[in-house]
Image (tube, rainbow, N blue to C red; front, side, top):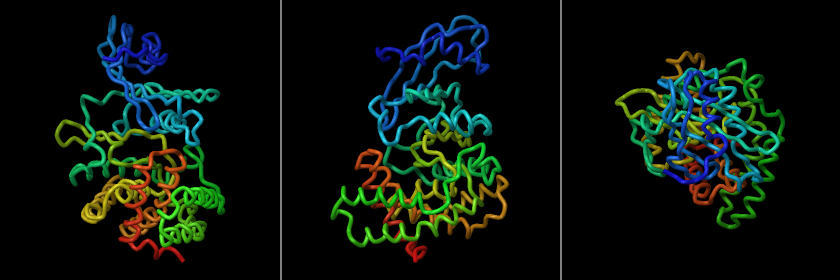
Length: 352
């Protein structure tokens, strides 16, 4: 147990109120709260709380996860928390249960940008498939990609997209020009470590960007993405072959092609030998799950076309990661792997 002082969101009286509002605590009350563990991630702090009660508390959780921001990232270009609080308040509240961790409270202070989440503690019932950077087995990858398909299918072409849920990116070349400016800074940073041929690929992508974005601006066959969809943001159930897979860490969600999540999972994070072996069967498995969940008019060829387009666009991801002070040991390796995937899948054929 940690001896760190309790954050305000973890005080017993506050938790009593939160759990009563959530309907899991009746006349009892939280009597004591202990910090079982506390660890920083790149963008946040994860605190595991152990709770004890007085009075009737049969249905109350024995523990919670408190997720909150890092003080040193308050002024960062990418400030975490805002998107994830919105996800749990707006999207998770209407989604089928058992797709994401349960959330008891999601709060953002607009003035201070302080935020926190009080989440279901799945530590004892679930596990993360592997320790980073080891990829999971094919069987676990199928479970992960099926869970992504279930979430994508739920939001597929939902009429709330872009109105009640998220916003559409503006038409025109403004998003591409923002990337062009960031890429110029990236080139200054890496210098000759980005060979001329690779730099030319980025320049061609920037030139073709408005045309390639026509796929997005069709507003057809789009869904809610996780946006940071590596395999270590997924809890798998410990009990046998259960499909109670939960996807967490939703601070980068947006509306876009479902294949963006798949390319992020595979092309960005896997080296060619494994990706070549797993990629096609997992795309088959994803498509079959979409169809089983009611997605119509999106054939297997369309999935392949979108996947190649997503892989091509993902060469921009390491550039944005570098801009947001993600450590080089993450974005540099992501860049190399994604460029290899572009070569493998002939994504240059999508460019003029």
